[in-house]
Amino acid sequence: MAVARPGPAELGFVEAAPAWRLRSEQFPSKVGGRPAWLGAAGLPGPEELACALCGRPLAFLLQLYAPLPDRADTFHRGLFLFCCRVPPCCAGLRVFRNQLPRKNDFYSYEPPSEDPPQETAESVCLQLKSGAHLCRVCGCLGPKTCSRCHKAHYCSKEHQTLDWRLGHKQACTQSEYLDRTIPDHNFLFPEFEIVIETEDEITREVVEKENESEIIESMGEAPEEELDSMAKHESKEDKIFQKFKTKIALEPEQVLRYGRGIAPIWISGENIPQEKDIPDCPCGAKRIFEFQVMPQLLNYLKADRLGKSVDWGVLAVFTCAESCRLGIGYTEEFVWKQDITDTP
Picture: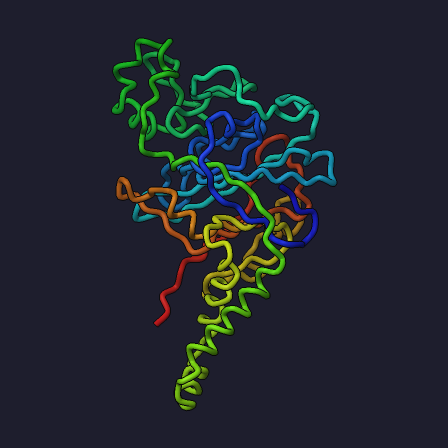
């Protein structure tokens, strides 16, 4: 999936998928579970993946495989979005970009096989090809180790304590079983594949005509003074929300909209960023819109199962217009959160 210049949006939908399809070597776009890291070196560390507001480790929300086909150094390119899921915070958001040329140290030059692998075991990979160890709870960089077995790795004291309480205390001395005894920590979001379809270019015209017909039919018998009153009170907020509903009406299950350089669709007239609100990339280039996460994704996250709720109207991700290469690692980009506004 890639867009080199503004064009029709690409829509993302969630589907269940076998675990092997969501591994790094398949270059997946996916929601939840542990990150399927692209580059195995230069991962963001615990400080970068801590909520700026409450300090707790962020949870992996989704990743998008978004190569830029007109450049050799972005043959593989991924965007990784993380969020805080702990009340009363639930507002910390960070997004990272990583890119690789076709010839690199981690993946075959040839495309991955579309056939399932021979092995059937769904073991969790907690060490990358670079040698980096990953946290048993969240799958992010794990520089800390258990002081007893020195085999279990963690991103933070918080996740080490959680894993100890939920089973590592018993498995600690049986290091050969560590990778097979990873419990459900109730920290990860449910895992799905994101499948991509191009938005039908006639969607807007068709839906607007349908909406217009419905409005005319529903208001056909309304008194003229009532129509005048309604027209006067139609706010900018109403128009923006109506435009949002119109845009997604034919594909209401979309959880993501991708289009590098296109305009996002906002759910509210409040808290729309201006150009000055989007910081430039450290390389000096402007950041441009690349994709947005829709509120429909919340239906799949089961975020309330422990009373840990996340919420948003739109999450809009802006990335370096030059997709610069600052070293071999992961470059932080910018995400803007717009909440749903209650209109009277």
